[in-house]
Image 1 (cartoon, rainbow, N blue to C red):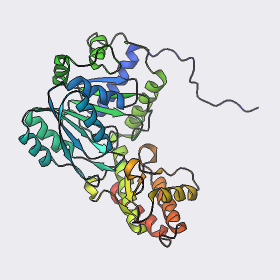
Image 2: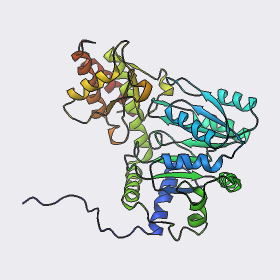
Image 3: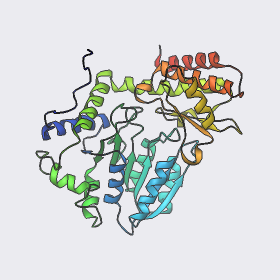
Image 4: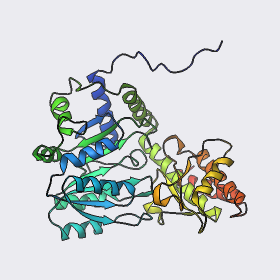
Length: 377
C-alpha cells in the first residue's frame, strides 16, 4: 500500500489577522514600498478594477497608456467611470516613452490619473516606469501601475518611482498562486479615493472598505474569512524569493529573455516580436511567425515535439494568435534547461512543418552564450 504523500490542505488552523498582516508586510517589502498594502482575495484583475473605480471620478480626465491588451482593458473601465480618456499608444513591438507621456500631459493639463502596465506578458514588452513616473509626478497626477508580470522578474521600486497604486499578482515571476493579489495605495491616493463619491462601498471592489475595516483598525480584525490556502501560498512564494535573493531571481529572468531571443534569431525562421532588447520583458518572450504561417500550427507542432512536457510555449490570444508565439519563461520556468528545451521544441516544429532545416544546435548554442553573458557563469 502506497503512503499518501499529498500535502495537507484541509483542516488547517484559521489564518488569523496577525498572520495575514505579516504576509502583507512581506509583500510590501518585495514591492519596495512603505505605503499601505492590501492583499485582496482574488486574481489581480480585482484590485486593478478596484483602483480605477475607486480613484477615478465622473467628469475627470485620465491618461491611459496602451502597449498591450491590458492597457486596452483599462480604457474601458476608465470610460465606464465617466472619465474622458486620453490615450497614448505604442506599437506592441515596442514600449511607451516618457516624452510621449509628457506631451499628452502638456496637451491636457486637466489629466489627474494615469494608468500604465509595467510589463505586458501578452505582448512581451516592458515600459520605462521610472522615467514615466517622474513625468507623471511632476504633472501631479496619480499613477496606477499594473506590475503583475514584472514583480520579481525586473526591478519594481514602487515608492522611488512615485507609483500611487501598484498591483501585483503571484502567478507569474513569483511562481505563486493566482487566487490572491495585492495593491499598494499611497497616502494621496487614499485622499483621492475618500473624496470620490462614486468610489465603491459595500463591494468586493471597495478599497475604502478595506481601509476602514482593516487598516484604520490597526489590522487587528479581518473583515471577512481570507482565502487561506492562497494566502499561505503567496507567503511561501515571497519567502522563496527572499531565500534565493530577489536580485538572483531577477537575473534568472533577464537571462531567460536574452537566451530565448538569441536562440530564436539563430533558428532563422522566427524573430523576436519586440524589436529592441531594451523593450523586451524579462517574464516572457514573444516571437513573430514567418509570413504566411499560422503561429498556432507551430505551437501545436512544438508541443508535440516536446519530450519533457514542460516547455512554456503557447500561441498569443485574440487578433495576435495567427502571428505571435509566446515563450512564458517566468517563475520556475526562468531556467536555462527550460529555455533550451523550448528552443529545441520550436526548432523541431519548424523542421516538421518544412519551414526551416534543422538549426536547433545553433539555437541552443546561441542561447547558452546569451545566458552566460547575463549571469557571468
